[in-house]
Image (cartoon, rainbow, N blue to C red):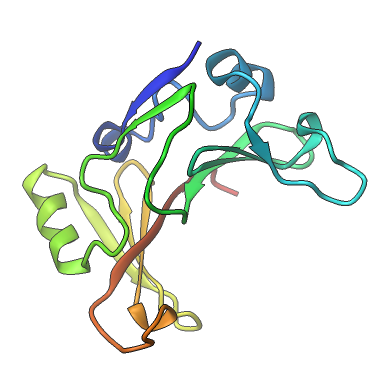
Amino acid sequence: MGIEVDLLDFLHTGDFGGIRLGMTRQQVIDLLGTPPDWFVTGRKKGFQTSPIWKYGSIEFQFEHQSGLLCMISTDHFPLEGCETLRLESWLLRQYLPYDEALKLLESVNLKYQMSTETQTGTTHLILESNVVLDFNDPSYRPPYEKGPLELTGFWLKASS
């Protein structure tokens, strides 16, 4: 049991080593085993009903009503897998500068659209696979100086 995920392939296709949006919890368990960590809410303390399962740095979020996988994401760096999830991180790393990321995406023929959230200032690079790379100003971390945008996370979310 276990999978290896090539994040470059994920960026191209949205397929996370065989894990795809819309899968059931049992299908994820069949590939990765019981989650090593999960989000506890209220009285729901067991992983079986948790909305978020965490395998290393990667979070799998399940839709409340259907229980189906609706999001794969991280904002935890450095990228780490776990016993059943091995990550080939390509060049996705904490503090990856925006300009460098654009060059990397173009070097592997990944097409994208850019959008910026006015409230947070987060810049999103939305790939054809619907994977989104988030970039923020480094002022959110010490020494709180303005600077070039840096990678702070990535996600793939089911359409609402």
